[in-house]
Image (cartoon, rainbow, N blue to C red; front, side, top):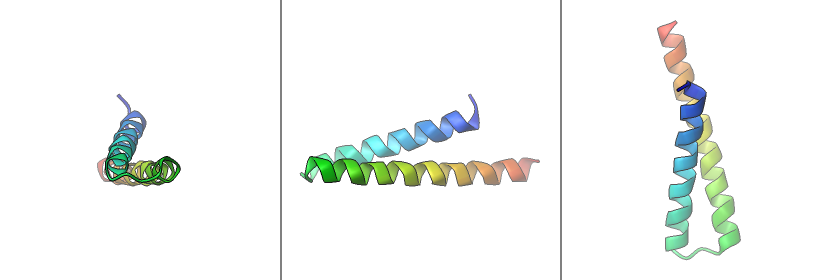
Length: 59
């Protein structure tokens, strides 16, 4: 499995967890989706930055 696929899976898991938590606290659906999308994007970029550090360290 490539690092890119792991980054995408980690971001999707973070987004799903964020959506679940936001629905549990009762946020309006539209706002919950927007916030979960932002968290998903943030997690994707964070995972990408972390994997880039590992790539540069191992090379």
